[in-house]
Length: 254
Image 1 (cartoon, rainbow, N blue to C red):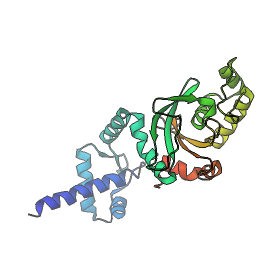
Image 2 (cartoon, rainbow, N blue to C red; image 1 turned 60 degrees about the vertical axis):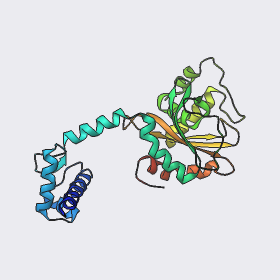
Image 3 (cartoon, rainbow, N blue to C red; image 1 turned 90 degrees about the vertical axis):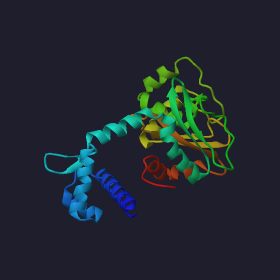
Image 4 (spheres, one colour; image 1 turned 135 degrees about the vertical axis):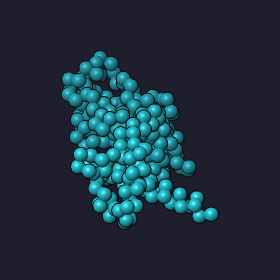
């Protein structure tokens, strides 16, 4: 009657070895792996052998164990098949729980940002104009300014983007000219996050950080936290940028 439990323990052990292996992209030897797992070398060796047979682990030219090509193929295929809004949902949930404010994932589309995902806290949510699939001017939103800062890298590029079109100004704080937008984008690019200080909706602050869902260097979109200015001052969000970035990168829990 103990056989099923023994198989379950064995499976758990193999998965634990796989998880530990993922922490060593440069590879790890059997002895170091056994030490990290606090298990006998023969036991760890059997786990690694099982993973190798499945293509989930391999050995490099120096005998170190690494994740196998089959594991990477499965992981990347699964990741790429998932829509952006599904992949980003755990991060949005973590930020929503931490700050008790509305959070978004948005992408840049021409002169607008498009909201791909939105999550409201259970209570006390701000009633914002944003809806999933909806748009707002890129130059007045934190997500928009952050994403524009990655594609408009010179004042000439900003002026060409603005052209002869008058920039809409939803509030008295909104950026109104190409010169003002260039100053905003330059500062945004230098600090690595975007800020909307009641520029898109009066009384609402917003801070945005980049989201790298499809590339490690080019943001696929931006994740933002929006809150009432009196309840969540922009200074509080700016001061929390390291914690926000850690949550987005999966290094911290709320």
